[in-house]
Length: 160
Image 1 (spheres, rainbow, N blue to C red):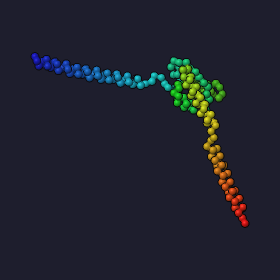
Image 2: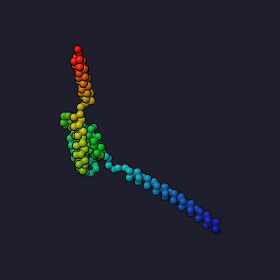
Image 3: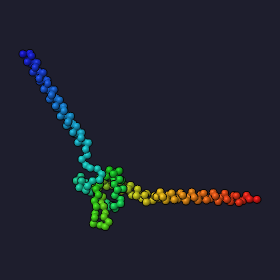
Image 4: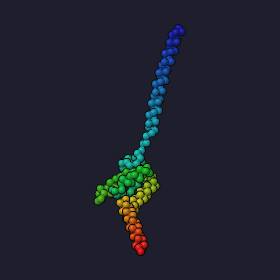
């Protein structure tokens, strides 16, 4: 009798251990899947399609931009983490592009656009490297001519 009770007790503890291991394994699996979901951002950030931007549920504002400025504007927008979408209007010649962004990002958009305009103005005001080289080349060549002219004048004055 005692042996039978001992066998049943051992069988019960083995079953309980198995159940505990399975339960623990399931709990860990659920926890890890929850951590994966927690790390994912449900909304895209940065450049996206017009449809994705509109589906985020906020009002949209837009500005017009030319073809040559798209890439440089994208760099500035990425720096300020703006959500925006580009839309091409082919009906005009040359085609114009519209940048759509969330209405709540208006302040950030103004800041990014000011930064972008500042960078563009600085590019226009800068001299090219070739122009700088030509300027310094002229300055150096003029300086050498002056030294030669001074030496020649000194030699002439010392003749007896």
